[in-house]
Image (cartoon, rainbow, N blue to C red; front, side, top):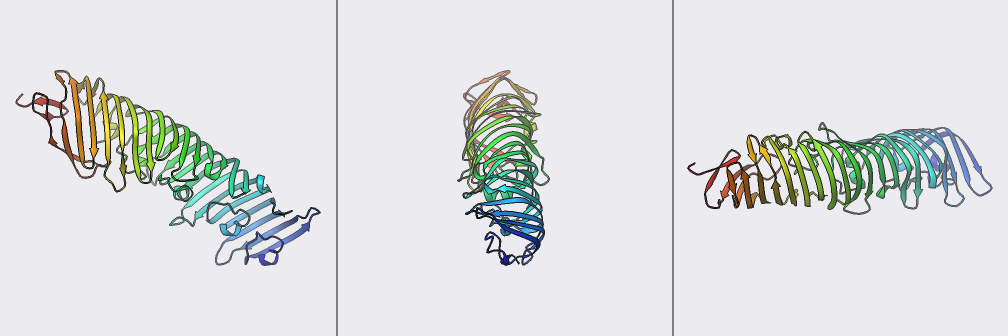
Amino acid sequence: MTDEVRGLIRELPAGLAANAALHVRATEDGAIEVDARELTVEGFNGGGEAVGQLGLAVGPGDSLAFRDTDLDLRNFDLEYIRGFMDTLPVAGRVTGSFRATGPEEHLRVELDVLLRDSLVEGWPESRIRGGGHLLLGAGDLVFEEFAVDSTRLDLGTLRTLLPSIALKGELRATGTLRGPWREMQFEGELRHRDSSGPESALRGSWRVDGRGDPVGVWADVQLDSLRFAGLRPSYPAIPIDGNFAGRVVLGGYMDSLGIEGRLAGPAGVMSLDGAVILHAGRLGTHPLRIEASQLDLHALRGDLPVSTLRGEAVVSGVTTERGAPVWSVELAVARSRIEDVPLDSVRATLGIADTLLLVDTLSLWAPGIRWRDLWCGAASFRGPVTSDRSSIHRRAGAVAGASFRPTGFGVRRRGA
């Protein structure tokens, strides 16, 4: 039993059944060296098993070092090793290989384990594979050039570490971790997928500040594929589909995350500059300038018309999980086309408040049409304003000098 040697090594948990060829030596500087070969440790109440070799050097004082430790873990309860790694930020059961050597302030670790997270409902699984140096103790866990290879992390586990992260599904990571785990830096490739949805892939560098709420993110990434349909389960208010690639730079905290980038895909080209809100069940911007060219609305959302648009929009607002959406849009469209209708120019100031579309100003220039202040008024939505289809009904409107009714995507004078 581990109780028999806990007087020598207080970090050992009590009550475990263990068998090993054990060699213990006291050094001249007051350290105790333990070498356990052919080790088998069995946890109580089905707490799993560890088999292999354990080498420890305890002391002098509070110092601790591993020496050529090589263990095969089989559904092993992480609580049994928390005495050696009290800053470990996860809990649950692990299965796989663990190797460690060196002092706790510069510990060389290699691991390939499957983690079942007991802190998340359903005990989701994450695969952690990598190697490098860790700094343990001082109330923190610090990565020192720790390389991860094909690691698969369930995002429910990530939310136990960084609660304000709303992204669901799983991340696959290959790259290098540096820094304290609450302020870690990552350089490499990330892939995101939620269930059977499409995968998004990006590569670059990230820095995270998870010491408080909201979380901070600073990143410079190249998007190989950004698929909005795969993000919608996490952010249901996203109103579009489409696949884009390009470069994006992020900086700030999730309640006002600065963004600058250029994205291109089958739906066209978009440049972004402003700030987005991705925090506490809120999705929004304040403000975000979007410049578009060759933009096809139908490629972004199947119930919108085929188009070739060029122009810009300045968007501000927020949608929450329970509250009514409130948005404002300043729109300026240059020479474009919607289906077979050519447009020379469109200027509009729009708003969304709950289920109302508010039109402050709308002016249109097209072949045969030169109307300013074309429509001011409101339209009501049938159903909530979400990424699903909503019916729009005009409630009030006025044309400068003439009444009108919409016909397709053009405008015809009454009686024409």
